[in-house]
Length: 292
View 1 (cartoon, rainbow, N blue to C red):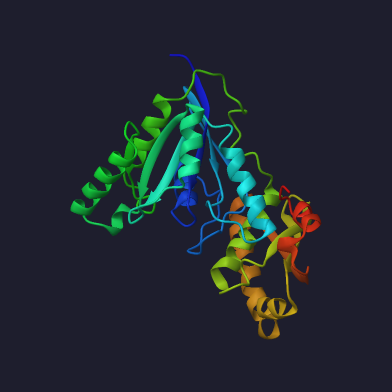
View 2: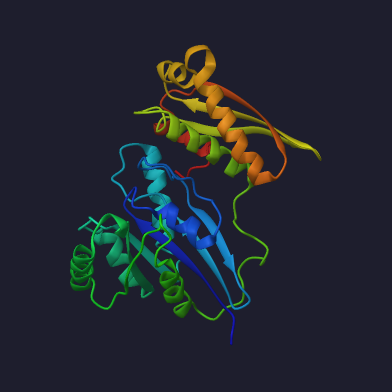
C-alpha cells in the first residue's frame, strides 16, 4: 500500500473542544486546555506517524470577531489554516446550531475533504443526538458527520478512519520521529499561560502573555527564566497576589508540568512586567510571535 501523508486543520468557534480533540488524536498534550474561551492563540502542529501514513494536525484559535489587534493576528492563523489543508475538521458543540458560513464556503471552494465533528455528545441524550445529526445532514449534504466526546474519548477512532481514507498518497512531510514543529521554549510559555487561565478570573488571563527569556540545560536540571507581561499595574498586582502567593502557585504548578515534559528537574523563575495595551501594539505583538 502506498504511503499517505497530509495536513488536517481543526476549525470551529471558541471553546468547542478543538484543543482537547487534537491532543487526543495525537496522543500527547500539545495544546493547552482550560474551561475559558480563546485559550489557544497560535497555530500548533501535532504530528501522528505510522508505517502507512503521517497526519499533520493543526489546532487553530477559535473563530471570532476581532476586538484587538491580537484577535486579528489570531484570525490570520485561521486564514492560513484555510489555505493548506488536505482535510478539514469543523468542530461544533452538541448544542450549537450555527456555522461560520464564509469559512465553510472557503472550504467548499478549495475542493478539500470536510468532516463535521459534533463534540460533547456526553451532554445530550440519544434522541437529541439523532436530531442534531439530522439537522447537520440537511445543512451540509454529502459531508460526513461524526459525533464524538473528546473528553470521554468516545468515537474518535471514526474521525481517524475518515481522515486516513481521504489523505493523498505522499511521502512524509516531517521526520517520523517528530511530534510538533514548535520548540520546548514555546511549550514552556504555553504551560505557564495555561496556569494563568486556570487560576485567575476576568481580564487577567486575556491580558497576559508569557516570554521565555532564558533556558539553560544541564544533565540534572533545566534553569528557566520567564516574564509574564500584562497591560496594567492593577493586573500585575492581581497576578502577584498578597505577598506573591498567587504567582508562586502558578510557578509551582507550571514547574511540575514542565518537569514531566522534559524528564528532569526544573528551576523556574517568573517575573511580572507591565507592557501597556500590548494586545493593540503591532511591535509588541510581533515580539510575542504574532503575525501583523
